[in-house]
Image (cartoon, rainbow, N blue to C red):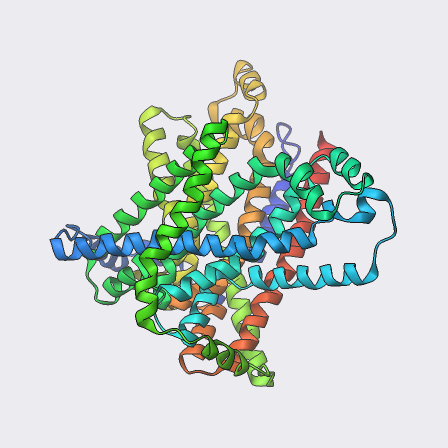
Amino acid sequence: MLNHPSDPALLPRLLWSGLLLLLLAPTLPLTGFNPLALFDGATLKTLAGFVAGFLPPASDAIFLGEVIRSTVTTLAVATAGLALAMLVGMPLAFATTRALDRHALTGASASRWAEAGKSLLRGLMVLLRGVPEIVWALLFVRAAGLGSLPAVLALGLAYGGMLGKVYAEILESQPRGMARALRAAGAGRWQVCGYALLPQALPELVSYTVYRWECAIRASAVMGFVGAGGIGQLLDTSIKMMNGGEVSTLLLVFLLMVLATEGISRLSRRLLESRRGGATLAAAGMLVPLASLAWLLPAWREAGFDSGSLLRFAGEFLPPDASPALLADIGRGALETLAMALLGTALAFAGAALLALPASGRVGRVLKGLARLLLNLLRGIPDLLWAALAVLAVGLGPAAGVLALALHTSGVLGRLFAETLENAPPAPEQALRALGAGRLRAFCYGLLPEVWAQWLAYALYRGENNIRAAAVLGIVGAGGLGQQLYLALSLFQLPTAASLILAMLLLSWLLEQLSRLLRQRLEAAVGQMA
């Protein structure tokens, strides 16, 4: 008998574990990832030499001066890109939000033409945010040349689609009593938005915008890998030159920049709590983008940007290549991308669970500090940067992508898992300890069931993100659809590139629907258990 009297759920646990192993089994040959090879003596020696090459960090004055200029450029790109995204996203949100619909506020019948127009705009937002920002940057670099302008345009489009969707949802989540009253009194769409919804939604809108600025800095830092300027381009050059000292200096600067932006983000949220702080934040929100443009404009003038080249370049993508051979290659690339994401997320789940125990303070204060420092390092370095480093460590191919996703996602999930452990009610675990159960048994049967559903929800969400990430990691040689796209654009096979981008969009949309369905099922199961 597999069932044990102290664990009546042992058989279902074993069955689910076996099913998971069956799902993961094909990912190993598809990605070529061999976890045991990482602990081979020759591999460990190679990795030790690779890490030793990072010491000591480069510190000569000329290089540090270039690092400072590139860092300022990265910050300026993120700020200017977000400003452009707001110019794109705010009108889209205003036009598509259901919170301002006349029929929603007054009960009148909806206009078919208005609803059709909104559907088209929502489709446009799906397209803008569905193409990853680094793919937009790669396209703009190929169309308009190297530099920071492609990065700003890429952020403006990708984040414009994100901001438009989220801004619209924030407006829809506000109480509509005042909006209905103003609409009934004859107020127009602009008046209802300005006097009813916007004052209520402003703190949440600003908070999300500041969060997106934080994300934009991370994104702009890695877009240099495709030639879009900033610290990422400097880092890409140092990696290709195998200059470990410069790479370690740039990684330290990058982590410091991420920590600084997180601090600025927290400060911005505190400023929102007072009128004077809000005025200060508003002034900074106008002055900082202007200062960013002043920093970037001289380089843009020298580059001689030709807007007509963008239209000519876009026209060369049509029609997309639909040959059977290419579709078969795209199918293989999509399977490789899915395998990378699935295996990377599974490894990250295991790593995050192990790191969450010390990070939640369950094994002492010293280990808690060390575990949190490690989690900050893992999640602070973007997955694309981890992929570039993994390619140097384990070679080209999807195995590097699996390792990169596992490292970055371990940091993200580890922090979330630790927070759920800290917030979980301790009573069940304490009751089992009082009855004589050991620490491990009390954790597994008392605390783990309290957090397990939340851990799975987090893993599903990150798995969805990892599929999008895996689709572009090939840009630095880590396999999947991204590697096929980078090769097609490098060879100017633009119809092929168009088909690959469409495949990325379709894959992202399908998995978004699947993830939403799984989360709904999980929430329903949790509700039934409660």
